[in-house]
Image 1 (cartoon, rainbow, N blue to C red):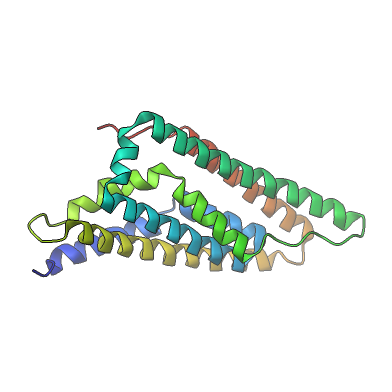
Image 2 (cartoon, rainbow, N blue to C red):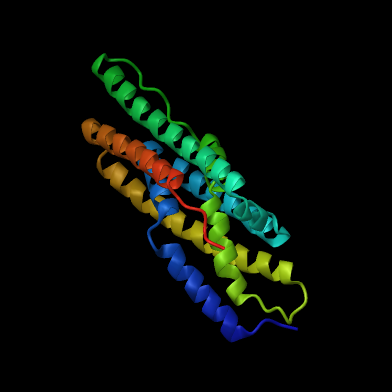
Length: 217
């Protein structure tokens, strides 16, 4: 049995709209790009994409439902993810200020984190976010056809489409943020302020995650 083309088109349209709507993922990628450049931004986008796929697979297997059903597990996961985001933000803030001091002293600035590290951190940031699990479990089942065979497979396919669209939107944001960063390249003080703002944004995202409530039901 093939999926209903109308239902699939409706899902893709809804997923695309959600992908381009500014949210924590987009702000995180923008912050990483402003702090470390396009390579780090794109790597972060791919990392959060992989982290999103982990949630899709967990949701298809029922793991996410178990996490969301347990207040203790949900709280532990969100606090771990929040602490990690705050740590990344503080590290970015301190790095920006150290770079500024080094430049004033005539020294060599510390190198950026690099794409590999940005990718790993992107995976962890998304994988440790229980709100992503809640989103997939609330959104995808509305488009799953129970009468069709392979409900778990449908969940994975639809989730993969959503993750792909989100990742493409994040990469577009990374490219745009990098243009802003390159435009400020001749003004070191502005670059420092952008990096500090990026660190502050990550801290704010972490605090927002820490205050997130477990979905009812």
